[in-house]
Length: 468
Image (tube, rainbow, N blue to C red):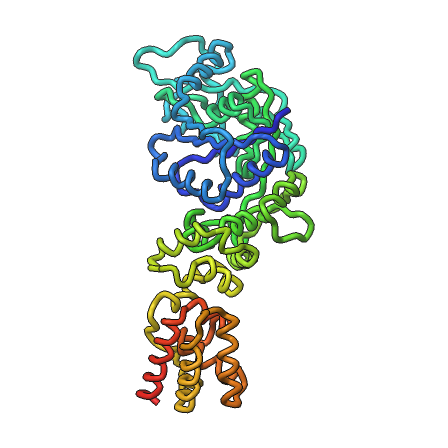
């Protein structure tokens, strides 16, 4: 059996963390067993499905490199197949037309609730032998088995079951003839030869219902794995109040795709105590047996930590296009000095996201608007003018502006003035960056370039002379 999984989002909203994790688990499982992963867009809800949401889903998955092995399937283009299936079930007496009005169904529900019964359709139209007239608008219902039970061997939850008497004759087609979610999912999973369905455990009740549709169509249901939902740190289902935003927002906030994927795979799945994974390691180690049954907890601080580790392990040359796109879309006007790859390699150990890297490196591309007040009070004293002038004299004569040569001249300045490097570097750093923090001073100056370095030293001298 060739493994075939699918991710089937509805384009009624942006792709969020939970959906991205489901897509990842399906993709990893397919890759693990050298099978196929398919993307299916369930866009039959004409009122709520929007093109912008479809585009967001596609762009999010593309950014994460969770790519479908075939062109995405759109349910909106398969209406003829669904209609054929509905008529087939009616012909075989496995489905029927239901003429009950909304008013009658509401009254039935209220009565059942009042009598402490489980609300369910009572089968009034189940054995009526007629077809809809010109002015009738019946729904179509499945003839759900009255006896027995649905038994599932779920790959995460183990053996789970429900009595058929607890399931009513669910609607397969609405009064306007459009197919319902339950029917389209089953028809598509059959046509697409899906072998494994990995989805949130909030779908478990849907699975019981869909199981009987598979049987009515004479097909064997796929193997199911219902994964735990994601909660916030307060134990409640993940929502916007926990900082849950669309996947593309995490990209805009400067997370690497590899960092977000690594964090997602650990939401509800584990491999011993291992925290950090490459894509290759995820594929090799992923399995359904290690998915936990309890809800996973989303923690933005942990996500930032994981992303920082991936930034440290990634070379600027490997994400050159990502850096160019990120800096340009965040209104940074940059030239060849410094190169973004060199900048990234120099700054990455100090930053959790590309957004932090942008902020921390702003001094390289923008003029210093003001000096850090606390640092200036400590380091911008009159005696520092002599140090800055001496540094300027030595640095301006460097032919090959590289960190090692810069280090030599800065240290020589300190030695010539009988000072420790710790007395020289802080004032130089403040002069060229405007703050007290940056990579090593020699690397900082290499990134900044000779012209900007000398100009900023001169400006710092003027500032001290006029204010101290």
